[in-house]
Length: 456
RNA sequence: GGCGACGUGGCCGAGUGGCUUAGGCAAGGGCCUGCAAAGCCCUGUACCCGGGUUCGAUUCCCGGCGUCGCCUCCA
Image 1 (spheres, rainbow, N blue to C red):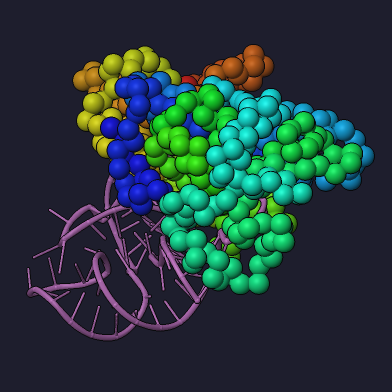
Image 2: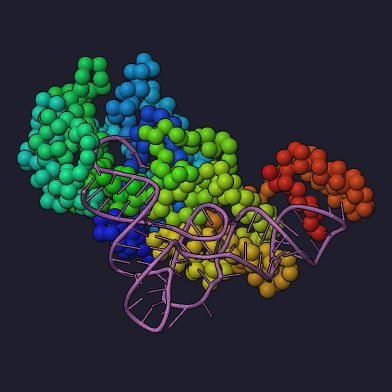
C-alpha cells in the first residue's frame, strides 16, 4: 500500500481510498495564457508517475485536472494582442495537451473547464453569502476567513502570524476587505471584460472558487487526494479548503505537493523571474523522456535543478536502457515471468512516499544483472527472462518507454546486413565504411556476435 | 517579522545509529571485440561547522553558518 506525505498532517501516512481499489484525485491544472514552463512539466510528470504506478498496481485512478480559462492574465494578454480571450485560451490549451502528449503524460480522466462551471460557482457563493461566511462589497464578494476555524492548516501558520510579517507586501483590495486575508470569490467586471451574470452584478469567479466547485462536483465530498505544486499550498489550496469548510463539506482527505524546478543557483524558476526556458524549448532540444528520467532520479518533494548537465546525464542513462531494450528484444514479453523479488523491492521503494530515486536504483541494478546474464548466456535457467521482464514491468510502472530500435527502414537494414556480410568475409575496410555511413545518418550502430543492430 | 525545507564523494542525487562501497553521469584500470560500440568486472574521492546524547553519529538533540521556498501572480 502506498504511503504518502500529507501536507495537512505533516506526516507520511497511508493513502486511504474512499472506495477500495479506486483512487479519486484532483490536480490543479494550468491557467491557459502562455506556454507551459518546466514547473508545469515537473508537476504533471510527478503525478503521471504516481498514477501509472497505482494503475500498474491494480488501482483504478480517476484523475480530474481542470483548465483555468478565466483569469486576469488571460484578459491582459487578450487585450494586449487585441484578440478574443477565447482564442488565447483555446490556443494555449491545445499547446498544453500537445506538450503533455510529447512528455508521455496520460490525459486526465476528466478535464473540466472553469467557464463551464460559472453557474455552479455562483450558486456556491450565494450559499456562502447567505450563511454569513462571505460578504458583498462594491468590488465583489469576499470570504470572511476569520469564520473558518482552522484557516492556516495547509500553510501551517496561524492567521495572526501570517499577517504579522508579510513585510511590505501590498494587500490587494485592502480597502474593501474586512480582513486582509479575505479573498475574492467573485470579481465584478469592468466594461469590456468577460462577464457572467450574478446576483451581485456581472463579473467572474475568483481563482480559488473554481477548483472547489469542480472537484466537489466531479469527485464528490471526501475525495481521496488533492495535489499540485508547493506554491499552491498557500493560498490556493488553503482557500479552496476554507470554502469547503465554510460550506460544511468534507474536502480532500490527503494533500500532496511537489517541489519546484530551480535554476543553477537553487532559485525557483517561475515565469515571474523571467528566466524560464519553457517546456517546449526543452523538448525541442532533448528527448522528452530525459525529463521524466531526470525527475525520477530525484524525490518529488525536493527541489530539482534542471540544466544542460543534468538533462544530458539523464539522456545518457536512458541510452543505456534503450541499448538494453534492444539486446533484450528477443526475450518474450511475459509479465508473469518477472522476477518477484525484484518487483517486491521496487514496490517497497515506491510505496515509501514514492521514493523513485531508490526505485530507479533497483531498475538500474536489475538491468546490470540482466545484461550480465545475457552475456553469460545462462538463459536456459529462465534468469534472463525473469530479469528482462522485471525491467519491462518497472518501466511500465513509471511510464518509461524504452526504444528497442524497431522500425528500421529497408535501406538502413540492407546496409547493416552488408556490414555483417563484410565482417564475415573479413573485409573490415568495407565494414567500417558502412558503419561510418550509418552513424552519419544518425544511427547508433552496435555490432554483436549475433549481428548488427541499429537504433536512433 | 512568521512558518518551513535543505546543506552527502568531480557533478546530479537517495539513504541509514555501527556493512547500502544506494543509483545515474563523469574519471581510471581490465575483460570482450578484427577495431569500435554496447555490455560485464574492478578502483577512487562523502556526509557544512561547533558542542551534546551514545560503547559508537553522516544519521538523534542543541547552537551556529550558508542556501532556498511560502506568507494573496505562480506547478
